[in-house]
Length: 175
Image (cartoon, rainbow, N blue to C red; front, side):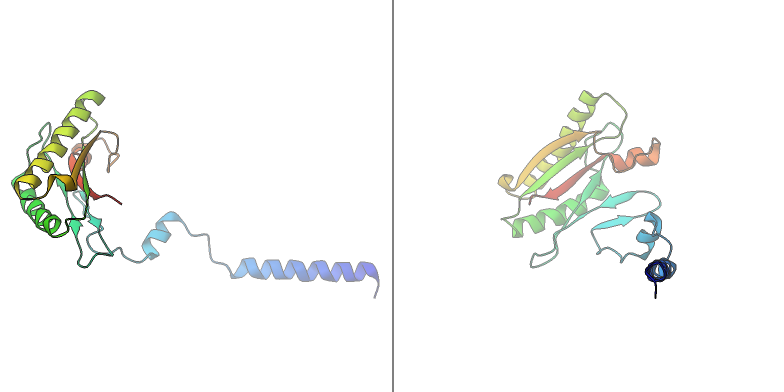
């Protein structure tokens, strides 16, 4: 067999191998198909509803699961709503049992208002949650606060639903 014939056959075999490999692959996975096919997240990590997104921190690796809540606020307010008090009471009870756990309370706002105003309002929201947890018996040394103002929105929309989602204080376990 001549050298050119061997090269031609080699090229044909390589081409057939590449073509067969490509033909057996499925279409490239899109971001939406990856999400649809992924396994569901653990309960309590993140739950999405049509109305709002509620995030919770899953403290896996602990003896018992500890879910740290996110509480929401009314427009231009730093008053804890009655529907969020039960979440904070449960968090306080869990934190009193886990005295080695340190938590940062993050205050957030929607996009309306100046940066300075929203940082101050986010701080008031974080402080309100801090004070509530301390009144419930949580050790002050377990808690710290920070305000992100409008800088870390959960919902990038610019409507009432997005604003309501973004007006929050989130309890986050320190690593």
